[in-house]
Length: 283
Image (tube, rainbow, N blue to C red; front, side, top):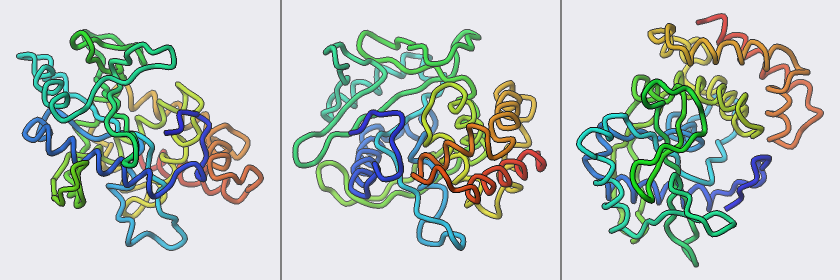
């Protein structure tokens, strides 16, 4: 797995995406009923799940996928200690807390696999607890299980959709599971917040990819988000998009080009600006 936040399109492989989808199916099977309400898939896997990769708009490329699986936990898991059931089931299936380079446990990131099957990490995220707005803070659910506090994450439980996954789990069993996946409106908000919170070109690319390729385009994405316009995270995302994607010289379109390895592609940058502008106008 590549941990470099500046990874480009070329760093992602079909084999890596397949490993993450396999891990996703494994988690969906292991957690079973808990995936029905308390957990939603967010992050870099989402674009490839909510946009039909076999019937893309003209000129669109397949999404490169992701190197890890991001799972959003509903705050309801704090009630009746639902998180204990999650960690127990994951442990029984062979998952365990990952470790940092200093060999310290990373309670918000669990790992499974290795060897010939590859290694996949699962990151857990949770909306702010007790009114806290601080992002990237680790909320400890129990001793070696935690989640990254992510403002705006509750939107992923409002704007979300069911997607069917077909494939094999880590045991090689063929199966089909329906999973909750973050919707396009919520994903654009979360990716906009991520663009301001860290330097990871793929965040800007994922945002653009969804606006360009989901449904009929920016207006349809905006329509899904419109019921939540009073949410603080939506207002913040609009400010970020209006600033960082205002023109081709801004960091947003430049990051998209950087991710694709085409830093000098002015036409691409102009396209990014146009799609973001259309989205903001439609809100």
